[in-house]
Image 1: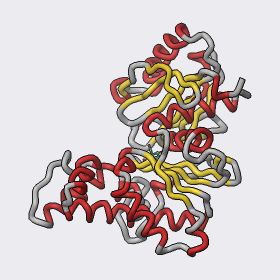
Image 2: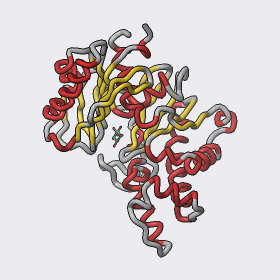
Image 3: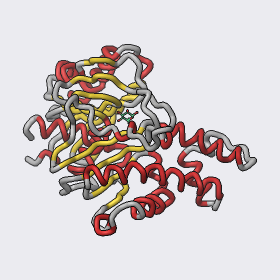
Image 4: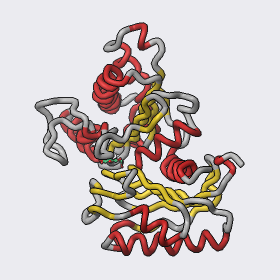
Length: 314
Ligand code: BGC
């Protein structure tokens, strides 16, 4: 049976909650109630709660073949360890794969959350059939997964593909790792919102956080608000800076962009394509795809499940 027809558990951990579901191909068959990440203190306690949900699903679906999990930070895929998670304090050197295997009795795989999203888009989504692609997810954190010559790029210490940490300004903001001008510190949700509030203030207007959320800014752009339009243009320009550099380093066939900010559709993608086009050799741009992700918010769970199945030999 093709791995897309097998059942597996996909787990997608975020700073707020851990999502768990039974997955088949790109379909979510059943979701467990999410585990609120910060309510359970230690990693062991979080895995305890995740384990209860997984065991309940195993009773209902005895055919489950594997479990995969994405975590938001440095994950050593080969060693099965969560090394350090940005935005989730206290998660250092957690043997995530072993914990999953012990609690479920199933073969498990763990990786960075954006790598799982990239795996899903590559194997089952917008990047199907491609050998070279870069997937970005734009949320509170900005993450990415990179596929080179038909293989996920993990790097020497399994920390490759952290485009959220890529500098777009060597004199820019000082980031999480004291790195200057990290993309995430400009286009991550929180910064996008803070910068939009400041842009409105500079225009003599007061706007709430909600007005300046990606959805609020999308609505304002639709209504023709020049400040919101300028915010989208600015975001596109910053993201283009990252894509153009990646293009020169990796020459991918496609950039696939998902996450909350990417839902803005043309408000983002139109100026983004323009800014990239203006900075790339024309013959190369003609062959470069800049695409919205296909699998939306479920991509993390779908990719983790698919990765676990493939690595278990399905
Ligand atoms: C982390 C990445 C993660 C991304 C999305 C970033 O803050 O550094 O490792 O993939 O958020 O959760």
